[in-house]
Image 1 (tube, rainbow, N blue to C red):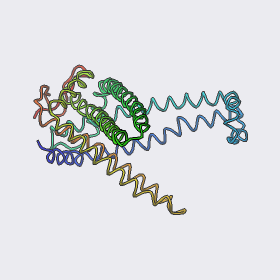
Image 2: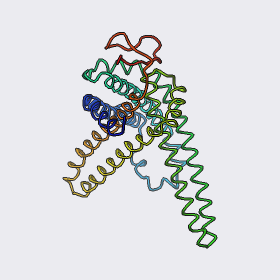
Image 3: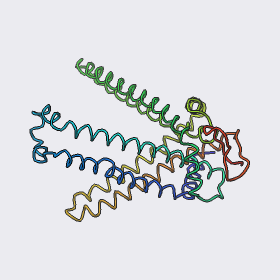
Image 4: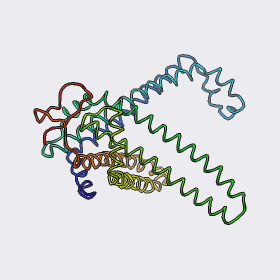
Length: 322
C-alpha cells in the first residue's frame, strides 16, 4: 500500500466513525467540568472553612520577600490543593487511557469491517477490553519517551557548551563548525522524538491488532520501523501535516484576541472549533498508521463471530476475520 492509499483509507475510517470525535469533545468538556468540581470547588470550601485571609493572600507583590511566611500561613491550603489536583490528574489519566484504548479498538475493527457502522456498545467493549493492556503499554512507552527526553536534554546541553567554545575561537572555522553542529544536533533530536512517537503509534497497532504484550509491542514496533522505513516516513508526513494545520489554526485565531469585547465571544467558539479539528486530526493520524500497518501484516488471531473479539486473556487482542 502506498501513502496515498493509506491516507485515503484513514479519512474513510474516521469519516465512518466521526462519533469518536464527538466523544473526545464531550470528554474534554467533562474534564473542564471535572476540574471545577474536583479542584476548584473543594479549594473554595477549604478556604472558607479555614477562614482564609483573602486580603492577605491577594497581596502577592510581596511574595518573593515572604515566601516562608506565605507557605507557613497557607500550608493547609497548599496541601489540599496538591491533594485535589493529584486526584484530578489520576481521574483524567484513567479516562485518557480508556479513550485511547476504545478509540484504537474501534478504528481497528472498522478497518477490518468497512461495512460496519459505529456502535457505542463496541466503543465501551473495546475500552474495557483494552484498558489494562493499554495501561501497561503506555507505562512502558512513557519510560521510553522519558529516556528520549533525558537524551535530548543532555545532548542539548552538550551542544550549547561546544557551540559556546567554538564561538570563542573567533575564527571562521569555529563559526561554521558551530552552525553545522547546531543543525546536526537539531536533526538528531527531531529524529529521536519522531522515532519515539512513531514507535508509540505502531506499537499500539501491534497491541490492538495482534494482541501483543507491552514490551513485545514496543520491541516489534522498533523492528518493524527499522525494516520498513517507509512506515516511519509516513508517520512523519501525517504528524507533520497535523502540526502545520494546528499552527495555522492558532495563527488564524490570534487576531480575535485583539478585538475589544466582541473578540472574546468570537475567540471562544473558535477555540472550540480548533479543538474539534485537532481531535479529528489526531484520530485521523492513528487511522492512517493502522491502515498502513494492517495492509502489510498477516493476521494471526481471528474471531468466531463478526461482533465479538477473541475471548480469554484481556491482553490478547485479535481482529475480526477478513
